[in-house]
Length: 147
Image (cartoon, rainbow, N blue to C red; front, side, top):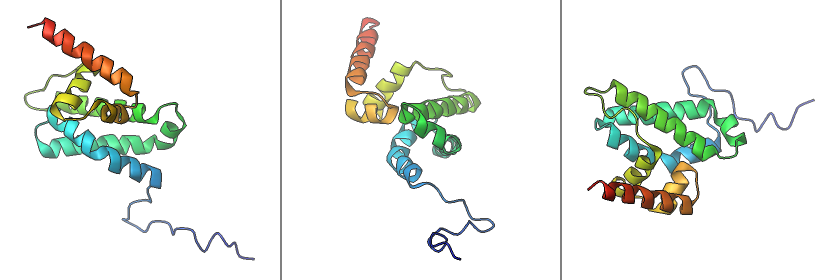
């Protein structure tokens, strides 16, 4: 007896071929890669190093993909993986970039340097637009008080 599902199943990857990537993960990468890369380039001016950091973050996200999908906020968890990976790379750069940075500084970077609006930032970091707008305002006021 043959199983009708066997005939439509993808064949396993051959030697040296990368394993099949879940469609949701591929879509996630396509959506977030340009923004993640823009963020990484702020901290890692060497484009090759920035691309490597983003690729490393996506590899880590891929390892935990099923767990992330089961979490309450997969995008926020993926953003934390990216932040951690970029931070690790900044420590290895010569000279080292600023090793740690508050999360609100990330919002300012995404808004003022990368050029994302509050709804786009919320989409990238996995939060709501109102929270991003409030945190951006607070960051701007904090910086202005230091002038």
